[in-house]
Image (tube, rainbow over all chains, first blue to last red; front, side, top):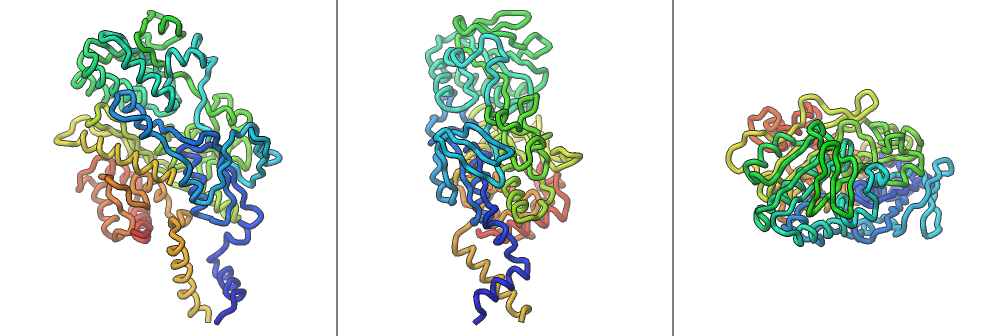
Length: 418
Length: 102
């Protein structure tokens, strides 16, 4: 019988257990934010290297997912189906700090928590998601969001917008304002318009929906614009930037959207505001002048603060959009890279995929996909790959994609929260 | 001595990780593989219409990817994704999925 010591010596010599030595003493990772990026990063770190000490800092006990929350507005799904707890994260061996991170000291490598504790880290993963630029749209602040919900962080705001739609008289005008790029979930405003139109057509058929846009083009545009006249004739109207769609201010008292050319008084007003990385990113010094966080494309380490990695919606990820799929994919690559870095190895160049489904109706799905790799310092699209669903399809293509969308949601939430 | 012990050791480590029920080490996963699990999860997802491919034969997965890529096998999203991978990348990902517990 070989002694344990000899056994270990052999393992190390054979290069089979290189992480053991370095993980001890230098294996403290803190993750800020328990969404698709942060919860995935925390669980994956423990799965890859159980010896790591991983702490997830997240103040909410329940996470409410944005993907499929437009179904809640259309009353084809309940908000409870969007909600996930952190039991699976804890089961994975992650320490859950159920409080907010109030400050990051990149030089001292510490995170200060709202409960007064301070965590030291060897590597920090920041996944703070988005915050709204409350100063960017005159008239729109946190109080205004109670009259004109954003519903762009799912939860109480989603429920509020649904209640407003249900209380609206038939014949009312629903207005959605869509921001300039970049923002969370590029096709989201148009999926929302579609599913609200689906609901209006059934329940309030004299009503109309107007999208006021700060852009001239949007994700899956031709697919949406082909479908709207077929599915919702006379209901959905899109006003582009060049047609005067940019909302310059709102009046929450009268639910009015003001553009350079017109004033639109809504019966229900949904303002999707301009966005930036979650506030802690700026405090930590990882956000640049754009409000988002530049990172290198292999381990997603901040180009502004060494030792801090940023993943998910808060980060600038080159060609990758701000989606839950992308956040989960980035977090897995980041976690694997951190394990390598802590073991003193260089992470290999990753390949990442994004796949993003939108529902134009409950049984009508469309998708966009992309494949990405590091190129000249950014995550770039691999030429020839990716793209949207075809414009012309036969048979049950759209209903099949709607089924895939639903299965994807079950999968990604299980992958993220366990 | 070393030549004899190594296979024994490797299987002991493999058994140990299986016994703990841990997810496979994605750090050993080839580029692209960890993104695949956003739809094709390691765990079986009830009522999912997306194929569960962990533990399938590597040759079958690789053939499917190549046929999606060429369009020989019609698909919704897989053709668009497969076009981002060359043959050796496909083979590596297929081998990794095949090595995962079913």
